[in-house]
Image 1 (cartoon, helix red, strand yellow):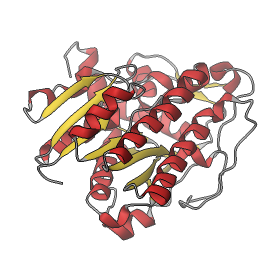
Image 2: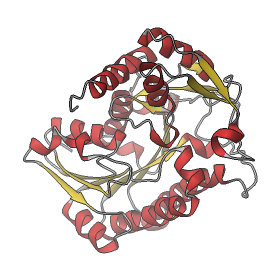
Image 3: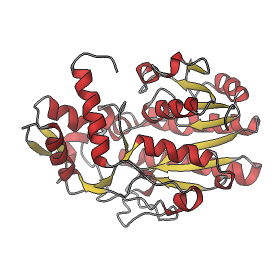
Length: 329
């Protein structure tokens, strides 16, 4: 891939901007498309100084723009999506349109111009399946379609099906990745992202709000490890036509996570349990456990996570303290 051109949709977002940096460091040319609804230009401060980078403001729903950009590149990484539980619950129609129609536009353009595409999906597709670690073939267990909590899961499954169908029926070189909880610098505390929210509450001396009973567990992967996995898959032809989990194996309860944040920040804040209904409205459902099985990814690429949760917390806390001091990151 070195020397080629990659289009990153959602390139000003959390994961997208880190991927942009990694691709530029490899010597590639990079186009980043983002409507800045959740992404930030500040995330691309380093990239904009690179002559091999170009930022294009716009939406994946703009078919003409997407077609033009895909034509200019060799590879597409489709990360643009409505993200975060809070946003999906509050704006389900917008989220469904962006996540389904937007992906269809990008995938169709990749097929039209015969470009390799990596489509980012999510661990949300497993729904309430609390067994684990979850392999790529694990069953999906979802609640009622009347519960907007599952709209994001459903939309991302449609994305996966589109990518796979274009590969099987039309020969599109597509790769699907399911990102588990990814954390690190540049992640916004908005839209229900738990660690940035807890860190800022701790630094502000406010109670750390933990939803439900706090016993639900997650595994948090540092964004640098996630980006390394994406790059490794892009470099591996055998990944085409397959689906891969990307995440960390370090399982922690959200209540224990909050206490860890307190320890790392030195805050004397308290931890407050907040019922799901109060945070997200009546009828909200969550999963009790979400742990990835990444053996398939490791077997193909040799990838291993190298950063711990404490590494991620240190990076996020340092960034939050810099922001509080009024210094531009």
